[in-house]
Length: 181
Image (cartoon, rainbow, N blue to C red; front, side, top):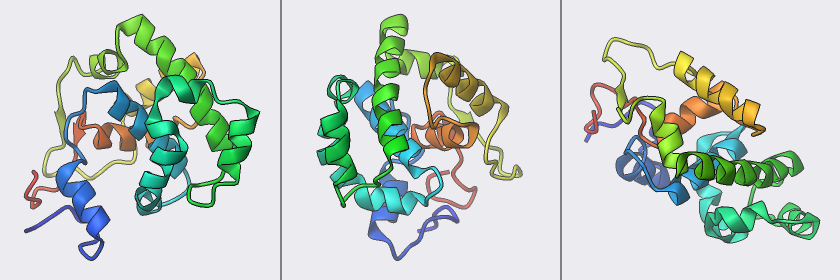
């Protein structure tokens, strides 16, 4: 079975992520929050690093319960900084807490985060044309990144947001020769 060029066929976790999750449209706010946080922790690192630590992140971040994460205090930050199973960056941990609060504000404003994020494409999936190169960012990711930053989110640059849009299925960037195309 042919897969996208970036999939390490020897890595079971990568194959599973590609085959069962990447690029599949997500509308559940819990999933959307989890992937937003994981994408922000990926900044400067490889996605496989995050995937390998995903279960530890779920445990450390209360299964990505946005309400709980929004209420983390300095004691919890210290606990997370001492957790060797996750990526230990004070900036990224503080951003996760901050972003949880803003995620909740967006939910209140739009009825759900899903409504907010999918409104950028009128609930349509953007499919890359077979002859187009895979971009690191697009005008769409620029626009969403700018809005999220304006609202106060951190670690939501345009490259991170483009990866996020791919992960949640708003953008379908499967290679033309991939079985998921």
